[in-house]
Amino acid sequence: MKKSIISLLAAAALITTAASCADNQKGPGAASRTFVLVHGAWQAPYVWDSVQADLVKNGNKVIVVKLPGHGSDTTAPYRLSLDVYRDEVINAIAKADSNVILVGHSMGGMVITSVAEKIPNKIRKLVYIGAFLPSTGQALTDLAYSDPGSGLGPLLVPSADRLTLDVKRDSLTYLFINDGSPTVKDLVLTNYRAEPAIPFTNKVTLTNEGFGSVDKIYIKTLKDVVISPALQDRMIAAAGIKTVYTVNTSHSPFLAEPHTVSALLIKAAL
Image (cartoon, rainbow, N blue to C red):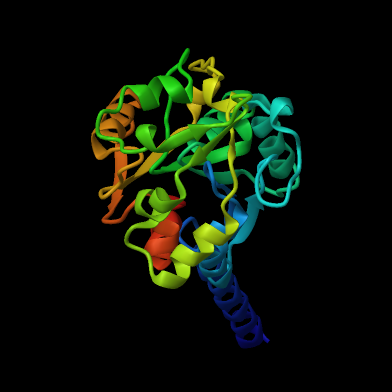
């Protein structure tokens, strides 16, 4: 009888140990995360397709945000603002069942910054990919005008009513995806539409308790001619970001090297 009790206790201990090991395997390095991906200007959710597939394949959840006035959305440009974009992302995050890894590219960096100020407790980490990263009181235009290494400015064509901005078509792929395959370049050209202009001029107001309280990571795009590496360095320094990764690509690394980007996002989420 005594031996039977000892055997039962040993078996119970073995089960407990196995369960503990299983829980450890589901720790920070292996646990599923929820990524919220925010595209930049002149682009739309399609740019994240390959990265989304990689993240999901690795057991993560992904929410891809379509900003109003982009893709198939027909919101009139005069109705758009940075706050409208912010609220669209906040609504998307509300559907998540955990704190999220919020990722923004280019103009999307302005958006995720505004979101973090509003709901910092819902965001596990902010990840900027070749993105505008403002300080309080700055608009996207303030940062863009301070970037002599950018080739974008001379190639912009405002509409007559100044509510949208076009990019000269023969320069579009050079700016955004010069290192992409012909298929990817065609994808960018096919999905292109003029960009709403008002959100570019909206300034952010940031606090230490809001935006300042969220962990941040920056992924630099080393061959970028839209947001120069020099401006990226200045924004990183101003924000005090310590964790910086690099991709040796143009402005759209998720199209040029999507697997590299998804691997970095998984690393950033740890």
